[in-house]
Image 1: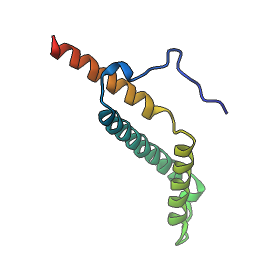
Image 2: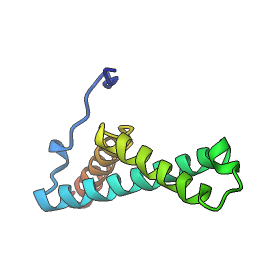
Image 3: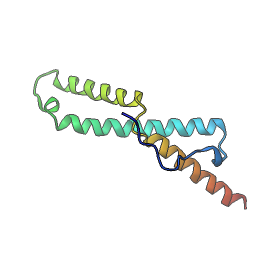
Length: 102
């Protein structure tokens, strides 16, 4: 499956961030996307048969399924939310820096 790319690919190069700032921003947005993804998948687990089984190991199995799905999605590039958030935050920071330097 080919991911859908935005009409105008966004970049963070024009935001004036240092490499270290960009790395921190990318890591924060990746962690946010991972947290959101795990919550969505945990909700999915609760509404499926895996979450509704009453055996002793079913909750552990369901949790393992959520982790495996989250890992697989992350390895495949995630949902793309992390990249979009990173770009938006970098551009907002760049716009803020431009206003304060005037």
